[in-house]
Length: 115
Image (cartoon, rainbow, N blue to C red; front, side, top):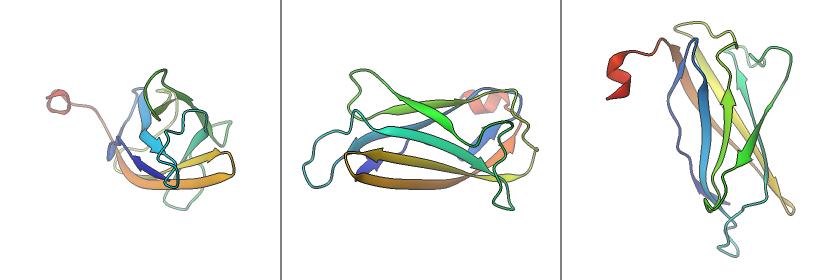
């Protein structure tokens, strides 16, 4: 599976955060993966889920996007400023299973972040 993650290395405290995967394709056929099941989890430094009341958040396919999926980490989730979290995206479609991981620092959003 190939892909282009559109990902941020930051999670903004007290804000909704969009987690996104772009251009998921089947490496064998080159076709876009537009019907995958995608979820994500946010792990703390101990490797435990940092999500309250759920262990994964569903990512929806963006219509006519050629393999783009998005999910929202709600502003109500408790993130600790300065902590580095690991975002883990799980992907499955037609017998293909994949995982993607990256780290993101929890911080407050500033005006400079919008530039």
